[in-house]
Length: 179
Image (cartoon, rainbow, N blue to C red; front, side, top):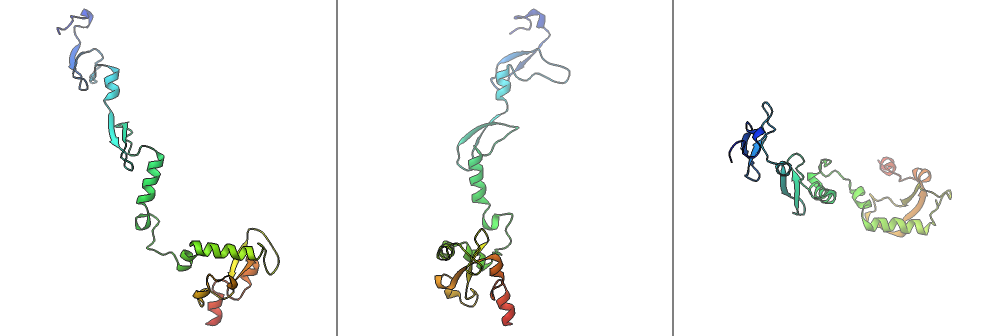
């Protein structure tokens, strides 16, 4: 292509080669230090397109260099975080400091025991007769001394928080009294 052959008014325009499609073009939009690199807006839009794979499911994602997505959506991101940031990999990990009693109370067997105690006590405090959200399942014989009775229904009673605090083995009272 000879300069000025198509449009004689642009005979001074620089001839460039588009890095996307490889075609020659007249760089009419050059301005001082800024040089026109692409032949059209379509090539300019394609320039920054990147194809990545989702970090979790492996699905292809079309994105741009500036955005550079790693996950195909929020669901994959959340599932990946949950699977990677567990146990020792969690930023909240404190060396496995969860107490034995806390792990016990998270078990299904303990939750069933607790619900059976509430049902047996008709969801009322057995001392004052109060109802509401502050009901607690109380072990008559403390867990620390009688671990074999932890899930025995006869070893439990429904109490409100205030009445529970008055018992002999509430919290660490049993340890303080015996020492």
